[in-house]
Every structure is written in structure tokens, then in C-alpha cells.
Image (cartoon, rainbow, N blue to C red; front, side, top):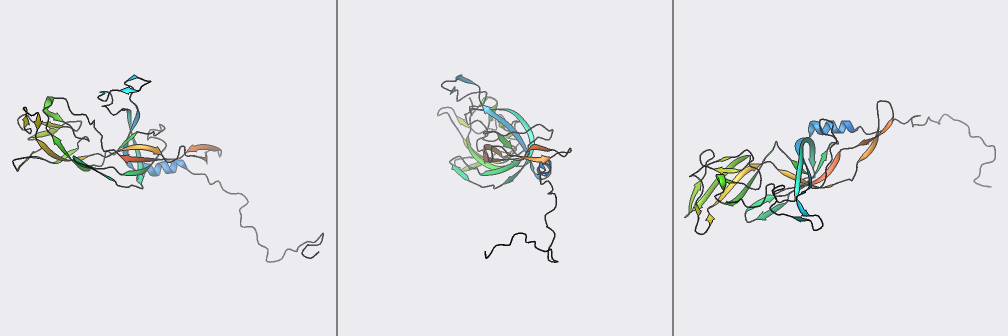
Amino acid sequence: MAGMDKPGTVYPSVWTSTQSPMPPQILDPSLKGISFDQLLQQRGIRFMHRKAVPCMNVNDLDQNTHDPKCRVCDGSGIFYYREKEIYGVFYSNSLERMFEHHGVWEVGSAIVTLPVQYADGEQADFCTFDQLVIPDFTVRMWELKEFVPTTGLIQQVRYPIEKIDYMASAANDVVKEYVPGVDFSITTDGKIQWVQGKQPSYNNTVERGDVYIVSYFANPVYTVLQHMRELRISQEMNAANEKVAKRLPQQVLVKRDFLRNSPEPEDK
């Protein structure tokens, strides 16, 4: 029949025949997870990873009743039980602004790639509400505060303060600036401590203090929202030329936290 070869037909090997370009054995294309971890360690920025769990200070588990003024978690409902150093890389960083009467909070989101282990070899895992604090960089924020005569003349802002850039109040159209080391100091946990006699005034009759503006620098804090992948694993060849399972660097979606400190007013 037309189009069919006859039985026993042998095609001759001619000079145009070429050897197959495919190698007789394909080399193992395994990913080298340790190389990626080393790259993150060398090129990433330093984070302090704070592990989070729901606050255990609950009166009734069935109703999940939690004191909004809880001293264990500062009323946030989240308890942080460990902090450890790790390096990671930012990308897909976006910026959103939340405008409030008492300040502007930049609450951008980003994706962060993190290694599978801490520097000491312990496995690193990230869950929702974990925090990533950037200790080596600061951002400038501002906040309007009302002076409250607390015990020790200590007041806090929304983030632990690293440095005060400017602080002032106004009365009768006259601006009064406050000088670090003269009118106030910064406590070790980043709060404002007024010097006795240098603090803004307070009206006991109406129970209201002077309003002052504080512009300050603080370390940015990001809260983990979710994993980009539930579990990132692959295979790689070990020193014994055997295939073994290998965890890959993790990617988490984080969002800038604009309320690091407790929002509860200080006790008078």
C-alpha cells in the first residue's frame, strides 16, 4: 500500500546521521538549599523574630473572655514568648498610609524571604501574628500627645523611641520647645520621662493637660499575616550521593504594624 514500508526494509546509515545531543546520563539538578540560606545570611537584613501565641490570661475558654487591660499581653491578646535573630530579604514592598487625627502611620505590606534555620542551626518557623523587628534601621514618625501626670512622669508613644527629633507644645500662640537631657530623657524601654518642673502643664480643674507634638525615630515592626506557601520542600543530593528531603527558604506576607506599644492610657 502506498505510504507503507515493505517488511524487512532497512534504512542505511549515511553520513548525515548525527549522535544524539542528549548525554547518556542527566546530571542531578537538585537545588542547594544551603547556598540560598547563605545568600540570605550575607545579603539580607537583620530581623528580630518574636514568636506569638494567643494570650493565655483568659477567664473562660468557652466564652474566650479576655481582659482588655491585661498586664500579661498589654491588652493586645497576643503574647510573645521568644525573640531570636535572623536574616531575610524584602521584596514586593508596597506603601499604604493610614491618616489619623493623631498622626500618620505608614502600614505598607511586603513579602519577606527567610532561611529555614537561625544562625545556630535551630529550625525557624513563622506563624500568623509573629513579629519581625528591624533593629538596625529607624523610621521617623510623629504623634500628638496630651500630657498626663503619671507616676514617675513617664509617658509612652506608639513605638519604643530610639531618638527624639523634635518635641514642643503651644499655649496662647506661643511655641515651647522641649530639649532632650534638659526637659526630658528617654527610658531604656523607649518612653518619655519628664524632668520634674519641666513637664507641660496640667489643669486639675478640668483634668486636662497641654497637648504636645513629638517627632521621633523608632525601629519598624512587621507582623506576619500568612505564608505564601504552606510548606516549601524539595530534594537534594547529600554527600553520600543519596536523595534527601530538604526544606527551602520561606516566604511570608508581612504588614507594617502601627501600634507596637499598648494603646491603653497610662494610669494617673
